[in-house]
Image (cartoon, rainbow, N blue to C red; front, top):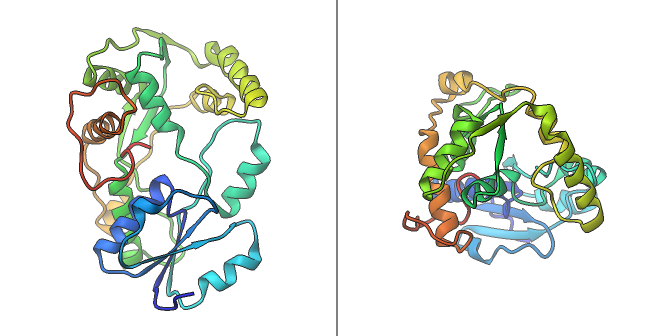
Length: 266
């Protein structure tokens, strides 16, 4: 194992992890990137990166991986909201990374017109490259023991769906429903996930979260780290462009964005 790396990065093949990897390389760091066995990471293979296949739930594989590294970015996480594989999610989130976020699936469903109604809730929307830059800012200027929220803009869910629909020439959902009306669809989705192993679009955890507007502030990160996030409109536009240029959408009015391996919204 190469001992010249000065940064250990978990979740390097994941959504946020790959963005942090790009940011680290731009700043001249040498990175030892931990990935799951059988992960697809050839597109990430560039000079300055050493890839090591480990299972983050196996402590015996982690100690050698840490040898010689000065800094650790633990970006691995399992962001699935479904109930059927909760034990795997718990094990991974204590230590590791699995799959892309459900946010990208939501963007695709909205772009395809597969969300006929929306729950009256709200989200904090941020571009993944801003989150990656915030990680490096925390390394450089963060205070040990402190926590920082790296968010973007607080956006009503109905507005977000309307912006996604408009970007692909579709009509946005006109029906708004309270969270409890979506419970049957979520439970049906969970049952389908249990039977098929496929992640559902509507989940019980997601519906419960929708009871509250998931709004946050990055004021502390802005004040102490100099963190800044671009408009959520740019994040949506870049996400639609990425999905379109990679064949996830039937058509896209936005050209491809270069230098990004993943959608800015998952």
